Every structure is written in structure tokens, then in C-alpha cells.
Length: 411
Image 1 (tube, rainbow, N blue to C red):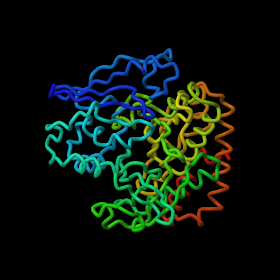
Image 2: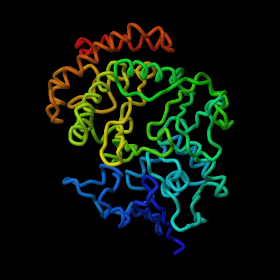
Image 3: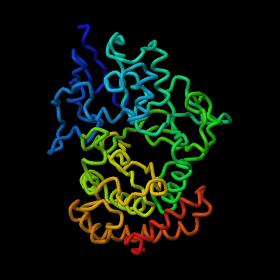
Image 4: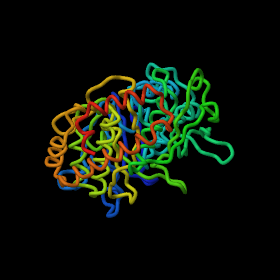
């Protein structure tokens, strides 16, 4: 049995299933019988429902990687490499990475070793191993999924933002300044502020100096320039505990590297039409139109999420990652197709009508919401652009982009 390791998957603190690793890094996921038989069981994700709404109970084993739903709980690219080094594991061996990070994953999922399973001697692979306690404490400080270096923090009265020593329990996400592009946190703060003024659901946020963040590791904070952006986590509850979320890469069952290719905004709209309310559909249209206007070319599948406030039925989660990316990288295309096109300058009333028809949405609701959003954008952009912490070159880039868009005339 030395080649077998088992992790318990908990949802809202209750066992829901297991991840089992056997020889050769084969990984199997299975539900617990109690979860399958539970009449009021909480929803783990839409990806686990079949075409008739029933729970899928059989899963093919995976090799080295986890099933896409669990893989999307883990960090990506440079952040994954950084965390894996701190945890002392090979970044490709996702079973051990989720083991190390399992106390503070996105949403209401946690992962723990079953029945006191010990950390296997071969877990590190080609990476220098660390002691168990040191390994998990170092890694958990940065356990949120994503590419940008960000971490969970606690906002303590009179002490400000603090990274918890054990890395668990933070109710804020702090995004550090980019070393490649100036003013990214300020850009996101400004675009999210505009989105809130237009009426979108935006979490509380603030700009902070990295030097004021307690427990920031020296190897991360060194040489940073500019502000950091702190955003309240909508998957953490005010009185403690977690609200469950899943992003749309999880919904569609695709791995993180496929987040730009395997679905469209029309597909997201169709899920919302089937699973949520017209209020969520309107919110989707507002966000689509707004991010078209600001030139956000990075609204991929992982930047849209569902929130399970009642533990069973999804709603569209609050907005996040609104950045005018065209200020840094010229791009004529959105991250995903709208309906037939991904070109910003081909988003017209006709394209939005096509999206509405294919996603089975009320056309009038879609077009009325789009027109209202454009009008409110022009109003608030004109009034606020010089009051926001935006560099002049970003303001000019957004304004030049807006002038090129047919949709900008809708308002």
C-alpha cells in the first residue's frame, strides 16, 4: 500500500469525496456514499451534473494531473512554479500540490490527507523537499488560483493587512504590483470603480502600499514599485466560513491552459440562462459591454465565476479582474468569442442579437442593457477619468479604443 495515497475532499467542512493516487501517478476521484445519497447535498460544481441534472458518479482516472475541476483550484504558470518550489513538490504533480495547498483553496473546498496519510517520500520528484510543517506554511501564504502573484490576507483593526503566519483564513486578496507593466493595480482599481458606478456587483477594494503589508516575504516584496490592490474575497463570509464558488473553466471541464479556447461568452450566457436568473443575464451583458469599451482582452473563462450563496443554486459571482489591457498590449480581440467574432470592433447590435438568439436570451433585455451600459460608461468616464489613479497614457489608450468601436455609439 506504500504506493497509494488518499486525500479527503471536503465541501463546507463535510466529506464529499476522495482523491486517490496509485502507482504511476494515476489519480482517481470518487464520491463518498453519504454525498451521493444526501437529499440536500451542497453543489460542488455544474461539471458534475449530466444532461438531465443528475449527479455524475463515474470518472476516468487521470495521469499526473487532477480532473479539470480540481486542477482549476490550483495556481497557474509562474505562480505555480513559485509555490511548488516553496512546497517542495514538482509543479506538474497536481495531487501533491493540492495536498500542500488544500487548507485555503478557492470556494468552500478543502483537501486533507485521509486517516493521517503521511507525505510520501517520492512526492518531491525533482524538487528539493522541505519538512512537512515548513512546506505547507510557506506555500499556503499564496494558495489562490491564478497567474498574478497574489495572496490571502487578513485586515486587522489598527494593524492593516497582514498575511496570516499559517497562511489560512484571509478574507482579502492582495495583488502585488507588476514588474513588467506599470500601474496594473491602479488600472484595475479604476476600472472596477467605474464598473461599480455603472451598477455592477463589485467587491470592496482599496489600494495599499506593499510596505504596509505585514508578513510579506522578503523574496516577494523586494524591488516592488507602486501600489498593491486589495479586494475582499467574495468566497469568504463575514462571520467566518466560506461561500462556494466555481469558475467557468471548471463549469466547462477544461484545464486552465484551455481558458482562451474551449468556450465563448455565448456559452457562458447560455449557462446563466439555464441555471440562474434574468438579473444575472443583465449583469453578464453589462460586464461584456463594459470590458469591450475599456479594451480588456483578458476576460477568459477563469475570470467568470458562479457563487453558491445557498450552497445549492448558482448565481453570477461578483466582478473581478477588470483591467484595460490595451493600455499595455495592443489587441483587437477579446479573450473569447462573443457569438461569431472576438474582434472588439465587430461587437455590434447584430452581434449581441445573435448572442441572445443562440443563448436563448430575451433580445430586448440584452440590447436595452447594452445601450444603458454604454450611456452610463460615457457619463461616468467623462466625470471620473481625471479623479481616478490612472496614468495619462492609459486614459488616452482607452479613449482611442472607445472611438474605434461601433458599440460606443449605442448610448
